[in-house]
Length: 93
Image (cartoon, rainbow, N blue to C red; front, side, top):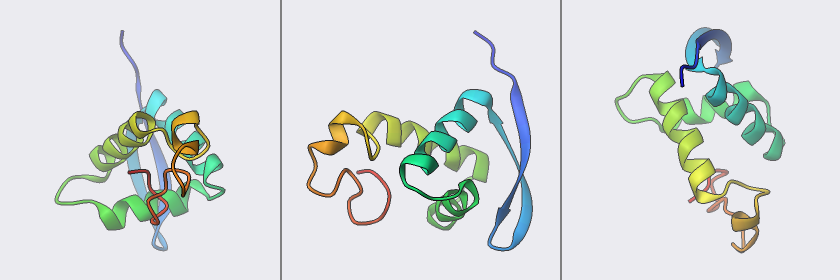
């Protein structure tokens, strides 16, 4: 299964930056942003602030994977958690 990498511009902390991700990760990121009632740029900004010595595209992939795996806010697994899976930070456990 091959997935095309799509490059998009995102405003992070007032600066326009390009991010290259597979379409599935863009879709997952958009869905997570919608469920958290936030913009894509705001969510990417939070991911950018939390990343540790890796490029932004990799940090986003890890974030999306972690959210899906943990049951991000709004999913059945997250509903079992007292804070909806947010762990007080806006990010799933």
